[in-house]
Figure (tube, rainbow, N blue to C red):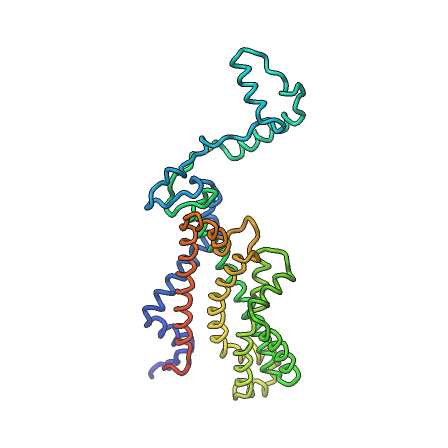
Length: 361
């Protein structure tokens, strides 16, 4: 007797269609490489020491060659004078010592009360940072104004931007799915309330809404950026999920679940949601792209990540001043990385939408 074969499900058919699209698989590979870099950067295996000043200020890329006017090392830099009250006091002491004359306690005949403390602090700082390392005149893709490696900085900035995009998209899709499920399933006053709430949000321009929430929250940080984008980006998923729930709640499988006494929560998320989850997934992939670009805009405008945290947006913010000086490599690195990821994610999103479309056989 032949074995009974089950028909493939929605996700199996979608994966088969997706594998046949070479462009989609190439885009998925690029996205996977970026996510792998994110994990390696978060664990400290890659770009862990991106803040080390390994190059001279504005060190050009290696394929351009060193700039003779910009080649400076730490050995050529003048150290801070030990005497905080009079920077010339130490030079005077050195001259007196060469002349065999006795050096006074201080230039003005008084002893510096902070000299011992300052010496102890400088000794502790030297022990912590170790000996000065000569900065390289060129780096593979150049350095910023502090001498940070642009490649490592781009990888670390990508970690922040991608995490913001992924987590904010998850928050937005979660809120949109919850609100859409409640409105579409219950209808009536519940649907009227969420429709009014949706109308208020969509009547305000998105960038103005984002800046308004940013001004209300005020505190800068990655979590703040996630909340700003997540709380303002739920309207798209809400509209689609609400329509799907309104369509599915009257179907036979939902009526059968109601006949056996299933609760509203079980019917909404145990029976209906698995049949509309592909829409939520596609919306999330679309929002990730939009939120990565939104984080760049917010950081460029000064509403983004705080000082000390690097992202692609903060790199572009720094690069606008560097471009005036002809230092184009930080702008090129951040813009190229963002363009590559956004393009790959967009191509994969389009292919995923086509693969999950039940009308395509």
